[in-house]
Length: 435
Image (spheres, rainbow, N blue to C red):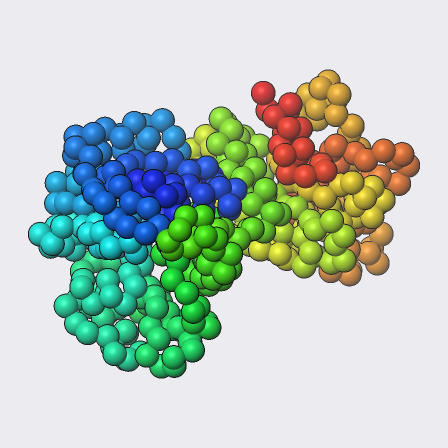
């Protein structure tokens, strides 16, 4: 998964481009960058800022988009109207979700957007955004209204949405309780309210961490409330992990993301970008799963609540990863794992006899079962067919199979299942077949 950050450079690496790249990496995503400005600051003081020439901003964006498949874009610091115009000219027709993080001032005291740039920011960038993520102070500046209550937050969110943003989150309202912080999400026409304990110390990089992690979660296909909640909790833990690297503000240190989700998401992105992978995606589409080390049920196996679908010559993720997101592929992995504990990951592909021949020629261990021989009593019990088939296919095996296939039954599509120790292992076996 590739995420593009368009933002300023922060030499302390707490926020800006550097902070975004660290966040993307914590989620297992690859970070691409376009630098809009160079700042000179540390954890105590802001010294200077110089914008990058607009022509160079445009050139950076073009160089990234013509070479890389980008799953989402985050826009952070945009210092002047020329930079805003340059970004708009390159992204106006982009289909990928854009997460817009308004950044007007640094926690170290510097001005990060010129006053005369606000009108262009509102006119050109807000309408491009899938979601905009201001804090209360930034939301007040964009809307021109004061926020003193939850009602005010909702009113301002609607006002910002009218500027063209499809969705709005306003962070950091602590007017309801001195000990609680309230965030509100306007998801289309529906409001969601989140709250957490107010942290008692100031840090550098929390806002960038939230918007960058939200960007990854949206790119992964999570429903917006789930994406916000995941990013919010990740940010809270990251702020709690803040460390005094310098002698001033503590710098946000990223919490560890879910390793299973990160690894699976990373490999799924690689799978989708394999040239002509569409030829191997079956009519029922594809799922890719990865279990915890000691799974007890389908709820311990992460998979797509949706599928990988065919788009052109590539694959596209439709849905998001979650534990319990897969039923069929997950149950197959669980069944193999019961006999061969090293197996934790699997994927389903379209059946083709030539694919099986190629797999055997490449040295992969192949087994099969006949769905037509399944006992009638077993067929009557929902969810029993795949475990029965896998047990039948591996009953005489002494080592784990790389592939198990069946040729279908009445109304049932033939299928290939590829198994491995982890998603990367499965991907390696796929590449042996498709190349």
